[in-house]
Image 1: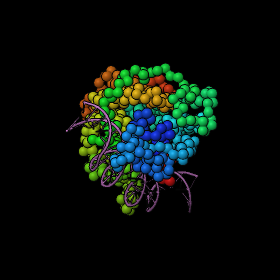
Image 2: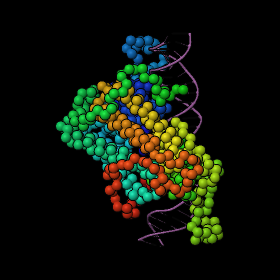
Image 3: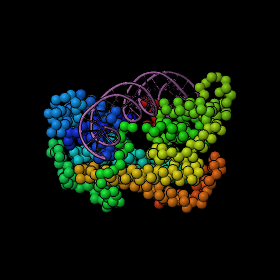
Image 4: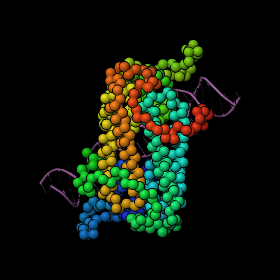
Length: 237
Length: 237
DNA sequence: GTTTTCATGTAACCCGTTACATGATTCA
DNA sequence: TGAATCATGTAACGGGTTACATGAAAAC
C-alpha cells in the first residue's frame, strides 16, 4: 500500500516543526487542519511517535503548563508528553521535503506534500505539482482507453459513473494547471532552503495563489464552538 | 474499515448475474468496467469466490470452450473454472440490492451500488442517492466548521487544499442533485423487482439520465487494441 | 461528585496484499 | 522452442484498527 505510515511520519514531523505538541492534539490537527487524511487511530499514532523518538528525530518533554511545573515534578503523575522536533529531526524533515519520488504523486501522499508547501522550496513544489499532473494524465489516458474499449457494453449508469469519475480527474488537472501557472508567475519568493523560516507562514508570504470567487464555501455556521462531539473524532465508545 | 470485502462480494454477484465468468476475467472487469475500485488482488478474489460457493450462491463449472470439452474430461488438466450464479445467489443479490444501510453512502460502497443501478429498483436508487447526498452534506458541514475555526492559523497552501477539497464535495452534491432530479422526472420505468431482466441493460432502458455536453472526455486514443500491457493489471512480477 | 473531555498506551485481531508455486495456451 | 499471457491458487506477512486499560483535568 505504498507505506501509508510514511505519510504519517512526514505529517507529524511537519506539524511539530511548526510547534511542539502532544499526541492527542497532533491527531486532531491531522484530521482537521490537514483534513485530507483518512483518520489515523492512536494505535497507529503513538507507536509512530515512539519510533520517531527512537530515531532521534523527536524528544519527549514533560508538557505541563508552567504553573504546575513543580507539582508535576513531585509525583510520578502521568505526564502529558509534549513532542519537540530535534535538530536531526528538522534536518530529516527537510530531506523528506525535497525528496520527490513517484510516491509523491499518489493521492494521499500528494495531499500531505501539498499541505506543507508553505515550507517547501519553489522548485520542489513545481516538481511535485507537475508530477502529480502527469500522474493524473496517465490515469485519464487509461480511463479513456478502457472506456473506448467497453463503452457499448455498458449501461447508462455505469457510463455515467465513469464519466463523472473522469470529469473529477480532469478537474483536478485544471486545478493543478492553475497552481503551476501561478507558481511560474509568482515572483520567485525564496528558493534558499533555510530562509523558509519557522513561524513565517501566516503572512502572505506565498505570493501568488490563484484567487477564487468564494463559491458557497464561506457562509455556513457562525464560528460557535458548540460543535457537537464528533463521533469520528472519538475513538472511545 | 466497514467491510471492504463486502463490496467485493456484492460486485462479484452483480457481475456474475449478467453472465457467468471465471475469476481472472472477473478481476479484470472489477478494475476496468467498474474502475471505481481500488484493485483487488487474487489473494482476495479467489478466497472470496470460495466462500460464495460455500454459501451456495455460486457454483463452479468446468469452463472450457465447447470444442475441447472431451479433451477436458479426459485428463485431470487444470480446469478453467467458470462461476455461475445460483438461484439462491440471485435471490441474495436481490436482497443486497434493496438493502440500504448507512454503509451504502460511503465512498467505495456507494460507487459499487451505483454501478449496479441498472439492476436496481427506482425507489432504492432514490434512497441511495439521497443518502449519499446527505452524507456528503454532513461532511461539508464539518469541513466548513473546522475551516471557520482554524482559518486564520492556516497558510495559503493549506487553505487552498481545503478549498479545493470542499469544492470537490460540493461538485459531487450538484451531480447527485442532477441525478435525483432526473430520477424524479423519469417516467417511472420499472418498479417491479423481477422485470429488471438479465441482458436488458444495453438498451436505453434507463430513461432519463442528465445529458452532458461532451467535455474532452471523448477525443482520446482511437479504439485500437494495441494498448500496452497494463502494469497495474499485472500482479505477477 | 460524577460525567466529559483530555490523554496515553497496548494487545489482539482482521483484512488484504505480496510473493510464491504451478500449469495451460497463445504467439513469435 | 521460448516468451508472454491466461489462469488458479496459498501461505506468510504487514499494517492498521478495535477494543480495552488507565488515569488526570475540567465541566456540570
